[in-house]
Image 1 (cartoon, rainbow, N blue to C red):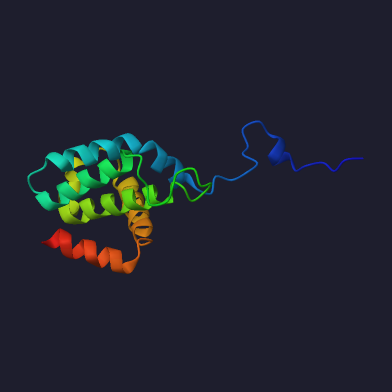
Image 2 (image 1 turned 120 degrees about the vertical axis):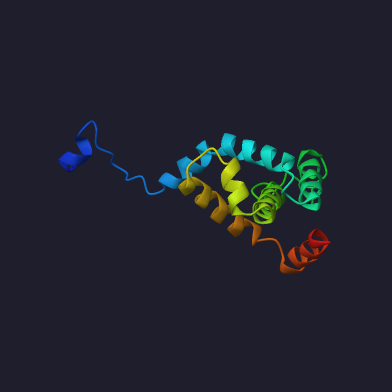
Length: 140
């Protein structure tokens, strides 16, 4: 004889698994807003030209077939792309300043906060010596 599940799990509108990461859905839905934000920051005269050039170089790297870690390596093949993209987005957000970023952002402040926290965390995976060297170059 099988054990009976609690009634709340069997109700048609009940969720048997709680949604523990609603921010993840928000982040996925924010991709179009992120693309618009990056495009607008690239055209904004308040964003330093050197930061825009860096973003352009990183975009070229990301679409090129050359990789630090080849994409065919399972699990870690795309890691360098994700980390460098996050580092670049984080740099653009920091160099533009929050007010400029907020002005160009079409989504909610909450999702922008999630995004900023996520790219800041992922950008932190770039080795410290690389971050410091790029930081010096980007400051001129």
